[in-house]
Length: 304
Image (cartoon, rainbow, N blue to C red):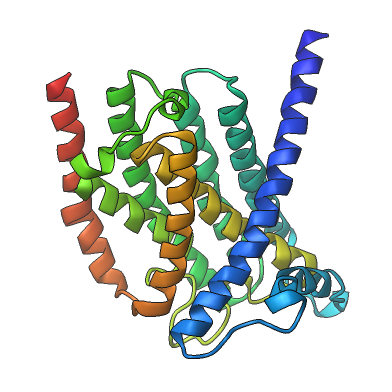
């Protein structure tokens, strides 16, 4: 009986966290379009609702109303597996957020974060491979190759935080504000770079190449499946921004402030930076980034 009550409690907490995060995602999409608009000397969405506040909800309703012709649908069962895996990642991240704020759980919170995030690479690969499109397949292969690099970065940062905190539970960071980003400035920079190509954001959005002129791995998706992939991408962006504030800044409200700062960072990078060449990114992460992360881990181990 106690186990069932605990399950219902976690399910309700996850549902509340998912609803609140999706509301924030809707307004973040609007804010990003506003930032991109002003960066390009235009206003962005401003017609639907007061100063365009309802634009994201109008797009959501429009996508739900999209219809498709089944006989011309270029997707197989593997594509639906990819969509389900991305929904699993979204729900799993919302569950971790709920666990963090209600104070329950064990000392392996960061390890569970690694488990959930590692599924995103498989979901994107299945979503691209199952569409019977060469453009989607090539984009998903690039993303899956990048997932190896950013997962190594996440593992090194989690080990570093585990050494500093004495465990993989980040709940103590709620109690005080700390400036670990000042001490580990290189690690913080590599973490941000890893987040950019974990979420397929400019300048590391290799899911789509300039010569292809398509939407990447979701080129054959429309309606609800496209909405799921699109919303999951932005949900991962928000949770990653929030986790960055928790790990490198700490404090309840202080980390939330810097979470919104990192959200603005995602939009600003998309508006200003050109795309990075793929081979140079590989060289940067394996020759520089991985070395910086290992040095940070070894330095923390020497201090302890």
